[in-house]
Amino acid sequence: QVQLVESGGTSVQAGGSLRLSCAASRSTFKFYCMGWFRQAPGKEREGVAVIDSDGSANVADSVKGRFTISQDNAKNTLYLQMNNLQPEDTSMYYCAADVSPLCRGTTIQDFGRRFLPYWGLGTQVTVSS
Image 1: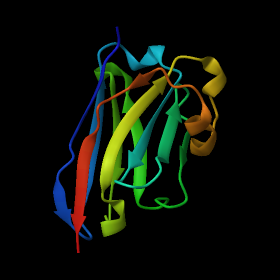
Image 2: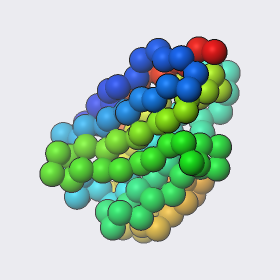
Image 3: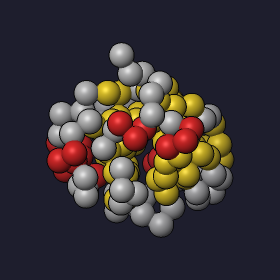
Image 4: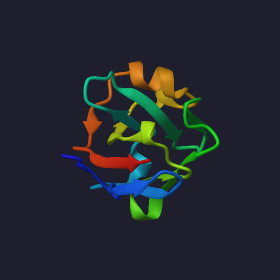
């Protein structure tokens, strides 16, 4: 059974930076795609960024230029570097993984529509103004 565990969420002031991590209990090489989603109370889940096993990444327009997704296969870890955080970024952030090669090259929008069998429990990010 594969587990995904997010970390790095905390409270920061607007303009600050955070790096979220998602540690997988097995090599991320086994995952063809991994991505980040966020969901705030009362709001729909939003796709943030996705990266595939070839390193191709796609980031949502709402965070483009501020957030960067990356992965370290040697450490079995996915990252989300978040810069210039704003109050509207306040949310629970989740990582998810897909084991189907069909996800490669996908956009974050399409990734969010796929069946994703592996999810973490989330890490909370709170941005104050």
